[in-house]
Length: 307
Ligand SMILES: NC(=O)c1ccc[n+]([C@@H]2O[C@H](COP(=O)([O-])OP(=O)(O)OC[C@H]3O[C@@H](n4cnc5c(N)ncnc54)[C@H](OP(=O)(O)O)[C@@H]3O)[C@@H](O)[C@H]2O)c1
Image (cartoon, rainbow, N blue to C red; front, side, top):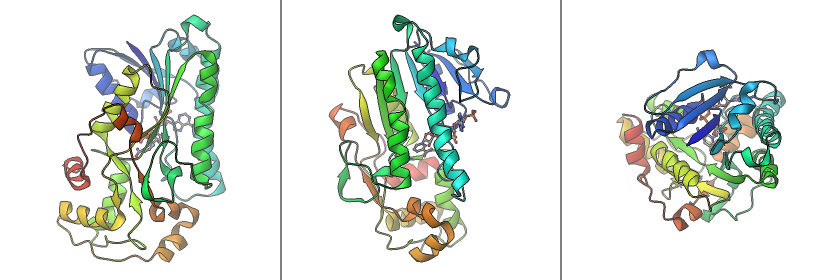
């Protein structure tokens, strides 16, 4: 099996590359900074191939020939601060340009030599406002910057369908795992003894442990009958105040300092949506596929991830 990972130098790309290579898969990771990347060769092969992430220039396009799958994980972190108009433009271009280049490269190949599967990641941020029942894959996305970003990001992958490629869109919640940057941001206030409820504390927080994310992507690679949007979120979504309490217990710190919502809004502007927005996401399609989550309890998952 050969899998090409665009954005393979990032946190998820490195973890996915290592897990596929350990299973004997030939992995090619595309990066704009190949020299800065370390190969993770084990039983399979792992190569880093340069590209510019924008155009079909370069020899990288030949790597897509006869590939079993292309997985697109490119994108500047939505946690990049502050959200100036320039940052927002980069959040969009760092997602849309690489994805469009990947689809253009597929179009340039003979029809019978194109990749069989295109797994094009997105996030669950667009489900903001979902509270009463967990959002499933049919829940409409919100008309917010992140909702529109998610829609456009996914739309950029869809032309691959017309090329005869199976397209899967895994909407991924916040990753909890060793070295996950979001976990570092969540734990920082608790470590500094200023953790606790933010705003009402009732906003839902959806997450998934890295182990489960890797297993879910593996399932989506193997199940060639699955197409379209698939939520990758633990069934153990919880509210922010519970997250703060759980992290306090894991780190043996009090987590009782209340930060009013307006302080976060003043400091972060539109980006406060990431902290104050409520997202209760459920893995409906994964459950239908019989996927078994290892990690459903946030505190246990955070304890493992924080070592
Ligand atoms: N981590 C999470 O909690 C989470 C949750 C939901 C969704 N996601 C999404 O999953 C993807 C991977 O996440 P991650 O945590 O692994 O991110 P990461 O560590 O920040 O890695 C991002 C990757 O994107 C590539 N990239 C960035 N800007 C690019 C551009 N303009 N053109 C081409 N490539 C670009 C980088 O590749 P090079 O610099 O090597 O070219 C890097 O490999 C991202 O799209 C992220 O939004 C992540």
